[in-house]
Image (cartoon, rainbow, N blue to C red; front, side, top):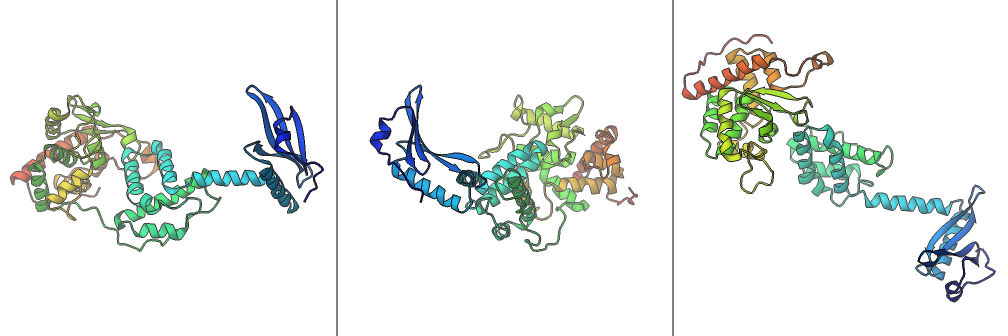
Amino acid sequence: MAGRTAKLTALAIKHAKPGKLFDGGGLYVETKETKTGLSRRWYLKYTRPDGRENRLSFGPWPEVGIPEAREQTENARALLRRGVDPAAANSDRREAAKREAGSPFPNVAAAWLEWMRPSWAVETHRKAAYVVAAYLGPALCRQSITTLTTKQAADALMCIPPSLAAKARGYLVNIVRYAIREGLRDEGRLLDLNGALPKTVKGHIPAAVDLADVRKVATAVESYPIPVTRGALRLAMLTAQRPGNVVTMEWSEVDLDSAEWSIPAEKMKTRHAHIVPLSSQALETLRGMLAYTEGARYVFPPLARQTTPHLHRDALSSALRRMGFQGKHATHGFRGMFRTVARERLNIPSDVLEAQLAHAKKDEIQKAYDRTAFVGERKDAVQRWADYLDDLRAGSANVVIMKRRSA
């Protein structure tokens, strides 16, 4: 222990004039004049392990009393004897505390979602936010991203429905990568989640493609009793657009005169704006919605007890389940229905169908083409498709399967 040649007292500090009062061993109180009076603060003068002089602040007097200041001095001297700079050690402790305070998993996951929002389509962000809020957040709410282990993450994934678990695994990996970039987790400390989920046989999204099933779906949609949900289901069936785009459809995106729906890039999975031609039946559906939302932002209003500003997409899935199509036809299945039946029965070219579905191009050369290609052809295609569904419901559609041409 460093020797002290003088002992400070509270009375001496209280009556000290501007300057320094030493307690011994490098510890001293510095008194300064400020706008509000005199301030007194503890400092330790010491030599770093590399030979440079430095000083370390222990805080203001009297908040930090004499015994505490002396104790901190002894702790600092103990670090120096081990070759550790006490100022660096304090900085490391503050940084660790700051990191720990900002690293609860729910907080980091929420920050990651916000960081990803500008680069994602609205529906992509919605899906990720749902998985985080409904599954990952509750399962890992007591965990810190700083110390999250592979086992803890894998255990959380095992509690998630198989249909969402693979997505959740990807989200977890990217949340951890984000945390490392933000300094909330040690460099290179990634999660090893390969093999964390049991292998499952990937199935297709259920879609009605046989004529009898298509007729049942089309008839059921037409007779669904809730007008708003019926309108959204009908539009999904007539346009073959993604359910998330349908329920978030805005009147500002619709031109009833030119019979077009312009979906902005930020709503599209491909991040490219998409023009959707509208059949006369689709226009009739939209005009019917004017009675509910004319002058409002969204075409399809939320149902009772829904918290979204527009119809929730789960309302469409629930409606199909109520109509008996669980496992047989999903909301997203309208896209598969259109792609298969319109190709086989109406002989619509694959390029036109793919353009209507707004599927991402497979290579860079294809990506360079105009995303609004085939608008004229698609306008004809969606009208033929709508008429075909009307005829099918009426029992007059041609049920002879046309020979499929190569795409």
